Length: 374
Image 1 (cartoon, helix red, strand yellow):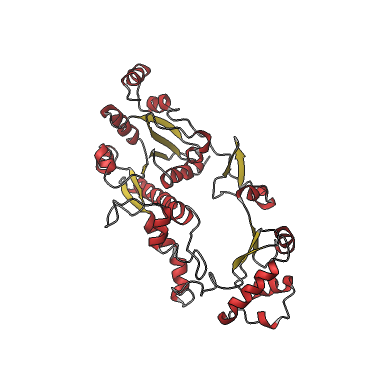
Image 2 (cartoon, rainbow, N blue to C red):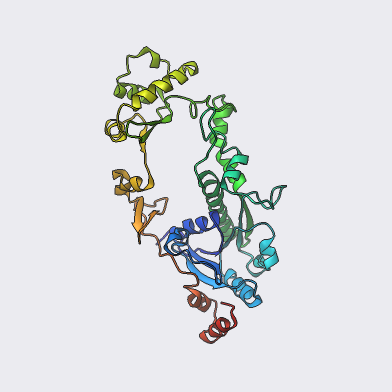
């Protein structure tokens, strides 16, 4: 049995982090009912974020369709919506209305800036939320433009994952108390919260506001280096014993220039030495020498290369399904590999099935189709 078996989530069609959160919960076994827009574009196999969900397509401008949505919500543990503040209220499907039908409902709201604050109604995207939260500050070396990895620090990390935690925490509370709640999952909040590890380092004096001055963004021993063939490798031996192992592998154990690992005044010159050294061999040769040792090493791989890497392949982390590369569910439970992800539904594929579950008969379904409700 999947870990979230028996949990039902209603997800309203959206973009990016909301659908990702729904996919994560579906991957873990939740029954995610996706309410899509009637007549909307269907991205087909490219919609990895829809995998494992059941789809019903409704015209939510229609009062009967709204009533159907509320009937579906009445049997749900939680709801996901990722629209601008006030949109769901204007549709007549806001938290007050939804929770009047289902007092145990955990109503999850995912936005960039949050439900309140001066920016709450402003447009934005992942890079903006990462920027304002501070999460983008160290995404680049001294004098370089800060470019955080797309979607990871904002949409996924600060948004989807925090919403998932909030929903599950709310469901646990509702099952104990009988009372649901509203989860305000703002990407800028989550991305800021993720910075607390760095803030701990900063509080100890190890992460100044000046970029390129810390072990994590300025040291020669924590960086990525280009190789002779144009490939890249990463090293990160922060601790002295791992740093010593790297120097030994590189034939630098007796080089006095590298003896004082934490002397910041030497970092720029030593980084240049490393640049020259790593340029002498292609990436695969460095991988053969350093991978699997305690030097804290990994080649920088393109997605297709990552899928073929022996470690990733043995764990089944990445797989191609219907010609589309995608990652397996995470985390794992009981030491078992995650099951294959559920199929990607077409828009409205499960309409009859979902309506039957709320007591709608075939005759009424046919009438609603004729009237354009479905």
